[in-house]
Length: 417
Image 1: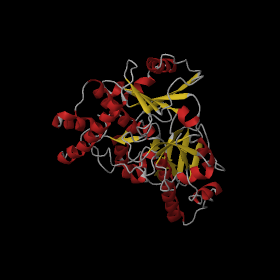
Image 2: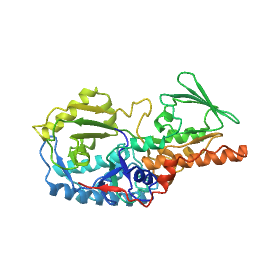
Image 3: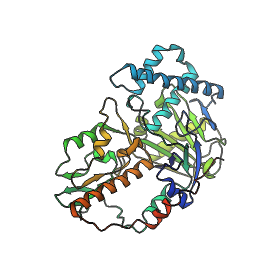
Image 4: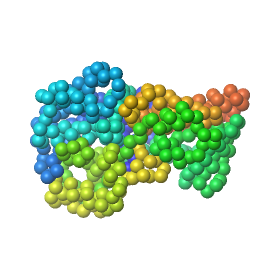
């Protein structure tokens, strides 16, 4: 229901050695140059809101139009010193180049492409910064779906480590030489330093009381970064009634009304479809009951496939309102300073900050970005304590992690059915 892909199936990805060592398999969903970021257009079917299939030649034609529009937005960025939203830039491009406009069904397909772009950021196009939207350093090797999910990675990394679950932090006291963390039941934990990796949404909502209060520059960085939302409705069916393609898309007159299903049967062999919604629509989906969300999604499926059966089980995520996340991952808002990530990453006294939002090298929003940020924060914390205390009891590198780092020569198990 959360993270599912390895973005960049290559040796440069810091999570790749762990995946290799565990023998986990990846299902390749795209190469490096896909216009949909995490999918190629090799295995898909699009439908309109009435359930009629969109001819493939229309989708291919609009794909080329969309690429041209995105290329032209780069010129808009160079011509306008002030930042603007990606949606505003697209509007300027279409005004300048009316030949790129599309009507009717082709317009709806174009909106679907914008919808898929919004899914990458988990935010609407009118919220995404033109200045920053394409500056992310996407690793090479394409994108792979974690067939067994990320839990085996988390479980292996947690081996022999004292992890306390169900300890919601309410207060962090940052003293001159100690940190005291207070959890919801009133219990305190005292240490020489602490690394804060709570999601950006939690920091933005001020759900943790910092004493003394975080400095203004840190508070501003937290406020000025966007946090996106993407929700999933996973449906398990008794049998497969849909075609053997990776993506089933729904086109509409606005990107808000578009949607798509990920076919997990193709990757895992299980009769599961996952409907995905991003941005404002993701928040609106959370306002429904789980049953109503399921019914909404099933209605779309039945228009495409009249013989669609009722699911035997379903799950609905609520990332935007989940009290432990309040959103999914970070993105750049329009018109904000360019040094926000550095400020968010910077330590405050004995506090260090990790998580995807402080990722080095523009890897925000990814598992490997979060992982790399955690390693970096740990190294910074260690240097700080060595300088302050002169010596520290060094935690032995977990044998599993050491073995994982030595396993870089083992190829990733990546395939496409």
